[in-house]
Image 1: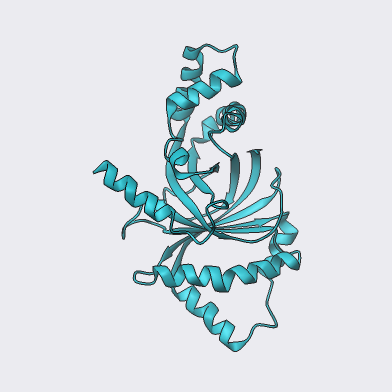
Image 2: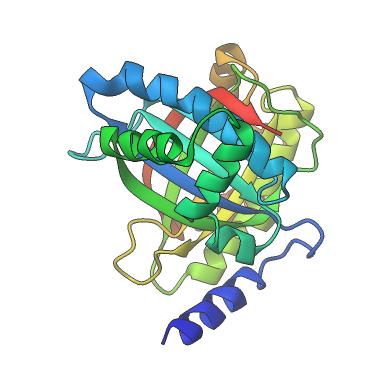
Length: 265
């Protein structure tokens, strides 16, 4: 059964439109921290950043981000404070990424003065102080052709979508053929820096809260608000119909606005 699941996941990953050399695999972790433990968690994130630097040097990951969330869902139980994004070169590394022993090994290399017992206790304490509410394994389907380099302080909106039943392929086609060119125009007009369209691999099924995510990156709040006011005056009636059809092929579940706090590249 496990082998069949892995084969199904692998088939899903390899069906993306980007070439094999360009594909990225990402794990999003939406995190809640108890109010009286926020300072403790902020201290832990510095430890985690050093561990992920080692993980990148060892070739286990290709990058890692920690974002603080400014706004998001009003639904009870879905008010997160942080989201981490871990980048991988291939799906096998991604599926093996959530391995405590590997985390401990990288931590011991990053902090050679710490004992294994001390490292395991630090990791255990950190797991107790936060609630990992959502972990999503994702594959990149499309992205803009920019050369923007991430740096702490930039903004991003994470838009979680669910494709309408029976319109999964229609929705993905709309994002690639209709919305991607719109975001390219925004970048050329200095109204956006980067855009990515991702497909959720796990969890899957009709009960999944979301099937896709778009990651919209801005240099600052001024660019973000100007982008919200953008209206393409050259859009044709046919293109407008395509936009409306694309919007009708998905349900926008919720949107999170975030600031990049720490990163490893």
